[in-house]
Image 1 (cartoon, rainbow, N blue to C red):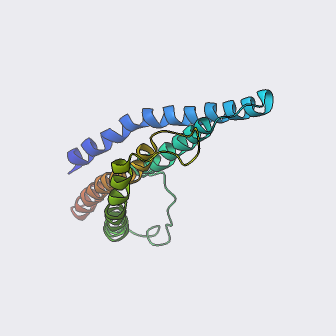
Image 2: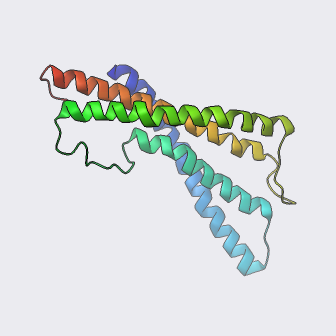
Image 3: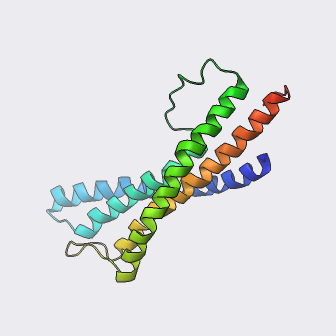
Length: 171
């Protein structure tokens, strides 16, 4: 189980480089927007939408990366005083009851939405905006898929911890 979880999680380490590039694009793009608008009285809708797309990449794809690295906020009122075995069981229940079903639902509702956008070749509603808005919309099911994979990795690790704790072994 740990080997499969490790294989799933290794993909998130590769994703980090895309997130770094998108965050850099976000910062530099926003700086360019402000400098060009107030310095040269020049602005372009495509540049503003490019910054929004970079923000979407960081937020949507970063959610799976953050989950993989256990960076999301947790409410430990249920598990703080519990044994390692109970903590692992609570993790499994949380992933199984909340994370996985919600991501499957998000995939179910977002895929038709994105496919429609691809089918019509959706572009920005602003004159001079991004020509391929459907690419940005495709991040929604991709984010759900990444969170689903991160949740599976998390569940596999929790199941392994639960099993080891039941045998009296330390993690």
